[in-house]
Amino acid sequence: MSELTVAEATENIYASLRADNADLDAHIAALKAALTREGIKQAVFDPTKLAQGNRSGRKLMQAYFRQRGVSVSFSE
Image (cartoon, rainbow, N blue to C red; front, side, top):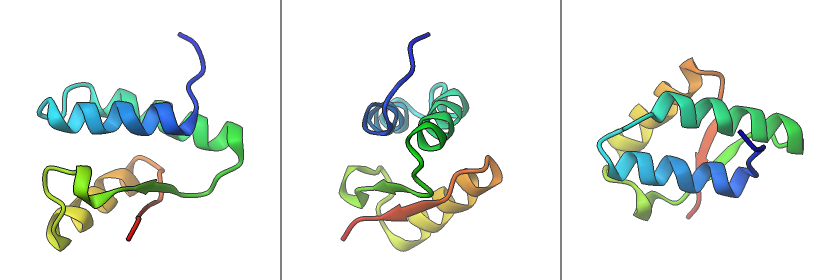
């Protein structure tokens, strides 16, 4: 498996969320590795691309990713 960039890993997560969370944990692991390689501390997501872009959906996503070692923030 080739090494993904943060942008590619983020797009894979959006696709996974649209596909009813298919392989989400694997995509989170790839994102975590990409963040580490690129020296970035936090993944930034666009809430308009999320199935649940409201506050509770964002908080649930942050908690789920935090449990897997990825800090998440959202663009405005």
